[in-house]
Structure formats: structure tokens, C-alpha cells
Image (cartoon, rainbow, N blue to C red):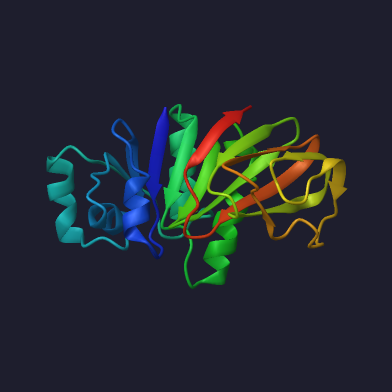
Length: 223
């Protein structure tokens, strides 16, 4: 099952984000992400969070229309997006696209990116999408294929230590079983040679970013 979660951040390219939506997607909103969903013409079936970004007078109408409201206290240990991701994974989502998770608050943006590495969410392939940019995390033993035009930027950033046994195919600068060192920049600003590229990881965690206005949707994922 594929889920799309709308967060309450900035949509830098609504037309590109709208094009990512598919018929049959399970649509959820993390609190004020409801407004972003509506902006793109999507109707969430679940709204989750402390609901402090939604007009209280609107809540009865949402319930009457069949929307499931999952209200949490304002004083809590998780962000609304983390709660929405956990809910989607617990209910069987195998692929999740998050829209509106990036913005002008560094704390929220970094926290949202790091959620991709959460072991509690490891059963799903999660993408943060913002216009033509995609972020996901690759775990040890996984590989992933991207489809995008030649010249599209692809960067690899180790998380929580070194990433070992990195293999790439279809990139300008290839890696063959090499290590990328944590907190170093060797993996930044690679690029696709043709219409697709594959990245594999032996051990560790690797944040993968596909960037630029021409970046396409992800291709196949081999868990």
C-alpha cells in the first residue's frame, strides 16, 4: 500500500508535488498538512496530530464527511509528522511519500529528514519530496534505482557512522564497494549519466538525495 502524508511545511512547487499523487493513494494529513492537501486537490481520510493548526469550528464538518481525526495532546514527545508516519506504517503502508516536510525552519526540516532513519519506520520506503527534490534513506543490504534525466544531481550522505560497501551504477563518479565517511562530503553532487542510476549499500545508513527541478519519481526499490 502506498500512502501520501501531507505535512504543514512549505510546498515550493505545487504542480510537481501534485503530479506525484496517484489514484489509489491513501492520503493522510499531519495536522495543518490538511491545508496543503486541499491546495493540491487531495482529500485526506485521516488527520492526525494535536490539531492546533486547524480551525476548531471546522472539525465537526471533517468528522461528518468521514475523515478520521486522531487527536493528540499539544504537550507530546513526537511531532505531528512522526505520529502520522508511525500510524501509516502500523496500518500497512509499504511506501510513503511525504509532501510539505521541508521549509524555512531548520529544526523541523532536519528532524523530518532524520525520521527517515528511524528503526520504527524501517518496514516502509519513505520519501520526502519537495518539488523536483527527493530524499530517502538506504539501509544496509538494500539497493535502489532512480529514474531521472541525465545530469540530475544525486548525493549520498552517511548517517550515524560510516556507510560501508557502497556500490553505484550509472553515475558520473562510481563507487565499487567503498566506504563513505560520516561527516565528510565525498558523496555530495554526483550526477546521473543517463536515465537511471542504482545505489547499493552493504552496511550502515545512507541518506540519498535526488535533486533539481527535473528530478523524476523514484524507480524500482529492491528491499
